[in-house]
Length: 524
Image 1 (cartoon, rainbow, N blue to C red):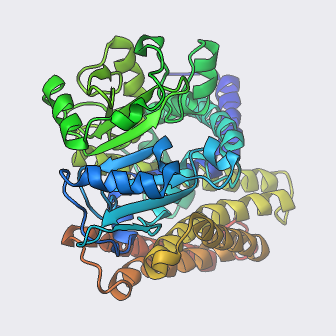
Image 2 (cartoon, helix red, strand yellow):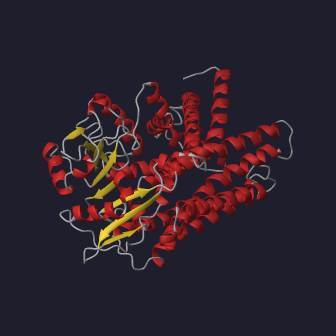
Image 3 (cartoon, rainbow, N blue to C red):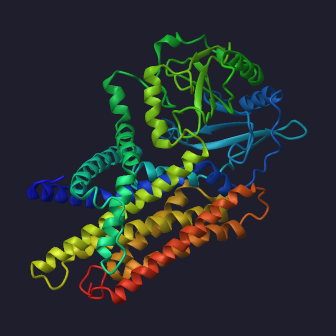
């Protein structure tokens, strides 16, 4: 396909500038997003064993609930009964206590876990699963911005829109050579040509995945605005409030709720294929008490990363809503759910999650390589214009292209390892401090040393940071009884460390033997 030269040049400029503006944020989003594909195993790997007594049976749970509500009446507003006990759900009953109104509005606060001692006494502690997986998910959703969710999400939406523009313009630029260069990666002395070939191949073959990510990210970023425009209200869990659920029950009706085992039986009678692992008791804005039964189903798309939902009346056990139930949704709900499922990879089980993990890493490489190519092209244009030394702007862009992605990789690795070493002492605030300290240190180092030197020094730092993950797995929490399958996290850390070591070696070789006037050369 032959395009006019001026049109092609215009789209190259658009692709380059949009890519450089959004590429660094998208690297963080894709790299952190790849890790969230295994959020559950990571949380289990990082979480210390509970000190609570073994969870009581479901038959004993009404006794536990009565003692919890007597000792902690604030739990009556919203609490959870876990049907399956594991390291990420360590207690039969849990609830959240917000410290202030702002925390309550955002669903935050201190999580309390309750059990019964062998003698039948109430036992409560606030020690729970590690928050590191949630922190990484926040990095992904907010493109690494340490801002309030309401501020970060529109920015993420703007980045996603730029992402769409970059894809369209990049595809137009690639069209003239699409057939000729489709499977070609030319490895040789022309390093820029090799990076460009790799960038084009990865971008083209993962294009459907990137289209899905871009469009769904826009939907997530402006989710509330879309529904507000349609006049739909939401409860605290993010579910639509429907008038069909009827008026609020009489005061105190929630206290007459069915025992969890009986409620579970009622739900299974009405929805036989549904196998809940959790019952969440709460109140809608109109005061009506509801229970949300959660369950995953690998055979269907699900609305959330890990589970589908059935909403039921806790007093009668009658199922009131199957809007989030896999396989039972109407056309509209299934369509909305598909946006969530396609973004989260919450369908098809482990093979899809591994595919999304690899595609996420490939996407991070796409943005990193794109920025490298853009900075190098800018330097070449400067030389053609007569500039002997690279300009300050090019130097800063080159340094940020190295410091931001590598700082993110190093920060995530160390904060994951710290979760294992710190155990009970790990908090979201501490994870944020560790991550952002390393992130900023790497970025400042790159700005000080320049792209060429930092280009091999920082990947080596990130390699050492990545090695802390298997090191933490070997040295911390020796009494943790965890499945052997979680050793895969340590193995992935070793593989990524090896890749970073190779990147460092290649960058150092380029510094010493490559063109001296390149952004990555000795004169930079």
